[in-house]
Amino acid sequence: MDRTQTFARLLELIEPFNKKGVALSETTSFANDLELDSLTVMDLVANIEDEWDINMPLNILPDLETIGQLADAVLKLKG
Amino acid sequence: MTDLLSKFDPVIAEHSGLIATGVRDPFGVVMDRVLSPTRAIINGRETILVGTYNYMGMTFDEDVIAAGHKALDAFGAGSTGSRVLNGTFAPHIGVEQALKDFYGTSSAIVFSTGYQANLGMVSTLAGKGDYIILDADSHASIYDGCKLGNAEVVRFRHNNTDDLDKRLGRLPAEAGKLVILEGVYSMLGDVAPLTELVAVAKKHGAMTLVDEAHAMGFFGPNGRGVYEEQGLEAEVDFVVGTFSKSVGTVGGFAVSNHPKFEILRLVCNPYRFTASLPPAVAATAEASIRKLMGAKAKRENLWAVSRKLHAGLKAAGFRMATETPESAIIAVLLPDQISTVAMWHQLIEQGIYCNMSRPPATPAGIYLLRCSLSAAHTLDDVDTIISRFIAARESLPTAQAA
Image (cartoon, rainbow over all chains, first blue to last red; front, side, top):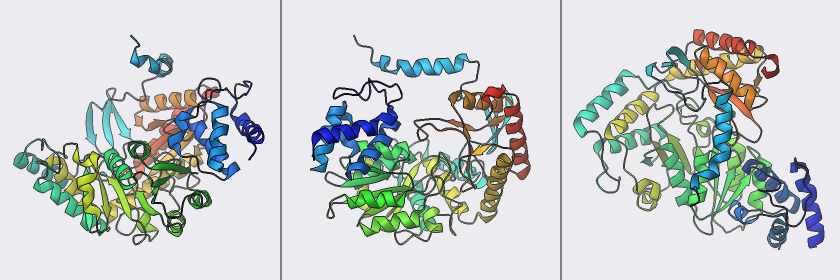
C-alpha cells in the first residue's frame, strides 16, 4: 500500500474531526493541535479500522501522537 | 518542582466555572439523613431519590438489616485481611453460596467492589497474546481492567453485531479471545442484543463475559439478568455483578460454571491483594440475595414505575435516551452542559435527585439527566417526579429549556 495515498486518505478521515480548522500535516498533533478528546479519538479510530479493514489495538494509541505516526501505524497493521 | 496536580488545571477551571454560575455542585451532593430507599434529606429538604441504582429497594429491608447487626456482633467490624489469608469468614462463604443458588452456577467469587470484580476478571482472564473485544460504551471498570492486563484490546461499535463480527474476523483464529458485554448499559439504559452478540462471539471461538450490574433482580425468570431473559445461560461463560445496586450494599462478584473457575482466587490480584468485605456487609448481601429470589411483587412494581416515568416524561415533551423503557434507567437527553446543569439544579431545589451525566462517562457529545427507579417508588412518586421535571423546565430561561 502506498504511503502517500494512505496519508491523503487519512487526512480525509480526520477532516470531519478538525473542528478548529487547523492545517493538517505530517507533524500535526492529535492532542495539542487538533485537541481531540479521548472519545473523539475512539470514533476516528473506528473509522480508520473500517477504511483499511484492520484492528488498531487500544494499547498502541498512546504512542501515536501525530498524523505521520498514525499513517505509519496503519501501513504496518495493513502489512 | 513541577506541580503534578497542574495537569488538572483545565478540569479545575471547568468545575469552578460551573459552580460560579450559581448552581449547586452536581458532583458534591450530601445526604444528611436517609429516610428510606427513595427519600433523603439533602440541603435541608426532603428529596425524592431517583438516581441511586437502589433498584429493588433492599437497603432498609428489615431482614437485611437484622442479618447485618447479627454478623457485626458475631464477627466484628472487619476481617483485616485478604480472602486467601485471614479474610474468609463464615458470612463470605454464605454469600457465595447464596450467589450460586441465585444464579444456578457451580462457582461464585466475591470481590470487595463491583469495580474490582471487573478489574480482576478482565485483567486475569485475558493475558499476553490474548485479545479482549469490548463494546465501545463499556463501563470504566472494564476499560481499567484492560489497562491492568496485558491483552490486546479491540473495541466494537456499541451493540453492533456486524461490527463485532467484522472485528473478530480480523483476529488470528487460534488466539484466545474474550468478548465483554453488558446486559444493560447504564448511561442510556439500553439493553444489549445479547443473543446476536453472543452467537457471533461463539462463531469466532471467543469466550464471553457479561456484566449484569444493572439487570440483577428484575430481568429473566429468576432475576439473573438480560442473559437469562434472552435464554443464554448455556452460552455465556462468565457473569459479573455487584452488591451495590439491586442487592443494596457494596461488593462485586463473578459467577461461572467453568470447571477451573476457582483457580482465579489464587491468580487474580484485585481479589487476593485487598481486604475482604466486612462480614456484616457479606451477611446483609446474603440475606438480600436470598430475598431477591422471590421478589416478584417488587420486580413488577419496578417495571411499572419505570414504564410510567418514561411515558410521562415523553408525553411532557422531553427527549428520551431510548424510544421505549428498556430497563429501570430512564434518561433524558439535553443539548449541552449548561442546560443540563441548570435543569439538574432546578430539580434538586424542588426535591428531586437524579444523576447529571456528561462525557467521558457518556458517549461523545451526550448530556443526560438520568433517573434510576426503585421498587420502593410508588406510582404517586412518579407523578410527583414528572410534575417537578415539568416545573423545573418551566423555571429555566427559554434558551436553556430542553
